[in-house]
Image (cartoon, rainbow, N blue to C red):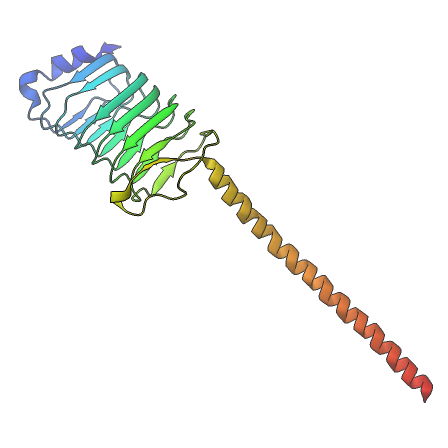
Length: 228
């Protein structure tokens, strides 16, 4: 294993950092805490698949960060007006507070998250699957098109709204619970089973009526024949 901060300082001295736009340190066997500063024009940072336990970012222009498959732990928070994509999946983070007005993609799956707070006006993709989250407040708009919460066991909560806000100006904190989803699924399942059952019963009723009138008509014809 290699100390991550020592590796960074050795191969990327401060005097050379201002001109770097992309930095890929993935799969370098790096460990420990790392502080990224001096990279004033850095747009993309990839430090995935290492053994990093802590990060500090001072990146005024950053747009994408991939810190997945590391050993980040405990509660974490980050604020950036330029960040667009953040991937911190497959760590051991327990809670995350993220304020990023330009964020469009966020992947925090496969952590130990019990609390996740996100504030973004243009978030389109969110993956928080496989976490022990019980309540997820989202301060977002209706631009969210992909939401993966598979494996999360939400607790039963009171839902003030049943849909995302209609416009960016009406964004509110929205507690999401699968209770409403399960209710919808149960309702749809009931409809799906009820329609065929209703048609089957209706068919038997029609057949019964036809059979009844056929027997009655046959008796009338027999009586009419006997009278002649």
